[in-house]
Image 1 (cartoon, rainbow, N blue to C red):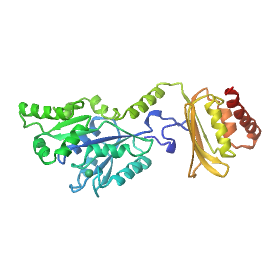
Image 2 (cartoon, rainbow, N blue to C red; image 1 turned 135 degrees about the vertical axis):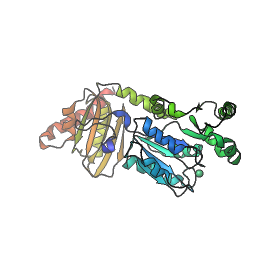
Image 3 (cartoon, protein in one colour; image 1 turned 135 degrees about the horizontal axis):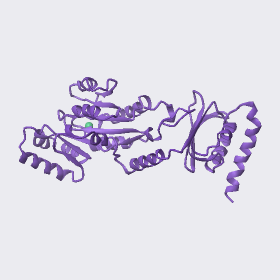
Image 4 (cartoon, rainbow, N blue to C red; image 1 turned 120 degrees about the horizontal axis):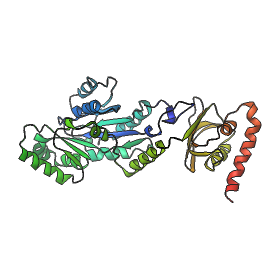
Length: 351
Ligand SMILES: [Zn+2]
């Protein structure tokens, strides 16, 4: 987990961590009550090297999963967040969203495993998560754990939910297949295949799967967008020559000066800067900025704490950034000159 605060993974003052892990990746494990979701999540903890927080939604179910999960996984510090007042697919939609944001902002895990109630609709849960407008979360391809001996009964009793959980899963895990004969197993497998023509169906014990398969569950993004973001971050991580520069105790005279500064950043005045983030007082207000490639954005910021900024790229002109951003008396002259230069460059570049 990264400890760089609101800057996520970026490095500050020589403290370095990777660019790729600033998203909280959410893996939903659905399945009827008693299908073996909790056992599966325990196996996830044992078979992978991933550290994750679990969100348990238990409603009208015996609330012991949390205790069971936390014990004996080797992940002594596994955190379990329980929602027991309703169902995250429908009645608790709003609490579900705020819990996700709270977990992201406070615990900040790389992965969040969500275990819905047995009768939760997977499709609704995925929709509810995707509707959270927050740039720092991304959905992984969901898993459904299927109680195979109970399949006919569940399908008859809850046809809609049964179908929903199967057709929305990227991976369907068969459990409790020991007592079934091959013919029966084959019939159920083909019924499941008919409901979900694309997904992976694991009909034999997933306990036998290799670590790479288990780790793979944490690596496949559900949406194109998530996939593209991940690829982009991978590409960035593959560029070992990217440098970073961090500054604290910075300020500018006004919002207008911040605009001019960022125009300078994106037009290459301070080197080839690919990304930058920061927050600082500018005149009477605190502002937050973000730079991605040639674009920048400025938003309001509540303030508090020390101001800071980080720049990632190649050939970063550290000293010149420092002259503009750091308010030491000795830099005042250089700062004014630099601001003029920043002001001129975009104009010249536009010709
Ligand atoms: Zn529901």
